[in-house]
Length: 494
Image: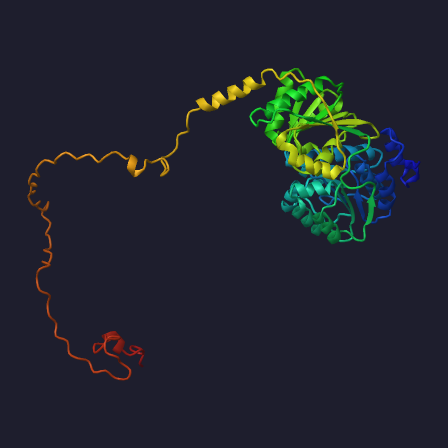
């Protein structure tokens, strides 16, 4: 079995790796690190949780150790799709580069830009950034990308899902063509393939597993919720989830929901019933998200209720259970979700709550993973479920209609309109009072205005003979003003 000492890393880097407790590289690390050390482009395809972060971080540290950074001109860039993943890469870089004199900066949204600019002004070797914040600082002339030697794109297929591909293309064009590119993705859809063909130079393709496959050390279960009514299915899922969690010995677990509103509702439901749970999604403040993740990593938080923003890049080896409250809309997301467990050689368990309206998405998942999760039976106490549905129906029936403007649809038809009523007779008209004519004030002389009824004054006009240069009715006719007859040199004769 290959050891890290056989991959060509320096003693300082090996010492940092040993401090982390690892001595044996994963498959993607074993194949990607030696190639990356030579300076060649790498196209790495591996499922989530296989150690891709160390696969590009270790050779990047090795190659940058001999150089020196300059202000606002980073030598390497790592692009990540989410703030959480970027923060995780920054932690890994700090951990592996602690014996090397390299500076780094984390550029993500939701935090102070002034602190990031101050770091850039001092000079950093490595920028770990999300595409939006990096381009924002570039447009403000706070960072220059013409000195980039190594560019890393992590979770490229997630970049595609989040709409970052145009930003990635722009960043590629801003960096020198001579750069080394390390490109990692769990899947290779056509758009990602086009991107690699356009910006990578003869990359070495490293594929350690079939794209979008689930780990063999993860046991998958599915529970079919018996209640199919749309009015009670969400509550039924929450009741089944609480029953399921209470039957398991959980140290750290993640509950995934499709919608952010469901994340808040499920987290509150678990907390109210005595479970140690907290939500995390894109609408929360960045400081709160970091605090929640830190508590989860330390084991202070048992259950993390998350949207797909946390499905990628969370490297928490102790996660033993993953719960899918909803079947994800994209089948690939199912692989990434359950990939949060069973990491670093550990075993894990993944549970899926399946309702009738999830069957279509579930068929896509089965087609992708090519295996059927084990059926799970639960003894759930459904007491209060039907009563809750009845209360919801009564609340909907008692709800007052909203106020809105009268529309043609609301107006009664002609057959329903009441008969026209006769208007009361109007009183006889009274003669209008004629007001006396007002006299002008003061002693000012008023000029009498001409009466409009008077006949206009007749003026005899003689006919004008037309010539070739004078058309009747144009110009001045027979009358030429005296100033035009005056010589242009009048008064200048000596």
